[in-house]
Length: 267
Image (cartoon, rainbow, N blue to C red; front, side, top):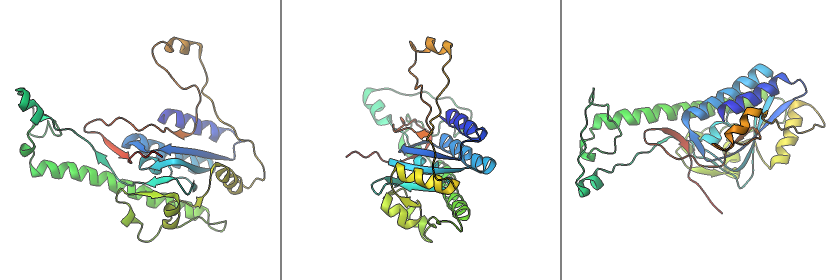
């Protein structure tokens, strides 16, 4: 997904007829690195091309979904959008108790005392306070990066929109709400995490307004199909449509991996 979005943005940058980009976001988040790479791609695109990216939030645009929206010049969220969830999570399972019940004993050889950090085979009481502090420090470092992305993105957006129909500034107590909680689109607007409540059509109107044009055609870039791709059909299913989009499926958590991830909601 990261490479596809980078390719889309590159095409939008090179095409003089493209005046602005709308980023459709409908996602509970995902891996930290992927979120950050997309964030950087959007930031660089706006800086180099001088074309605005307008985020249009769908049902869910939380955690990593908000992370990739933060650099956009304008953010539109439906009143019912679930967003926020600013935070970091690392997930792991400890199955040593189950192993003991079935009589399974692990044998571990390691080069250093921390080489088996987060291993599910260890007794919980064997995890030292020092090790827990190291893991928490990693979480805190990534969390601080998330907050910096939000602060920088919203400040830059406000600066670019100065003199126009200005967007929302972050509430001075916004960090109080960066504790993993989810927010409605209405609450996100009040706190300055988004600029406008509305739908995709409103995002289109805003894009035209920022680009200084009265009318425009909406164009969706599509992935070029190569004849060699036909051989992949039997081994792997791929989407043939390239969208500037953040997928709706929640990623499967892998032990020891950092995520920007929000809870999943259903109506």
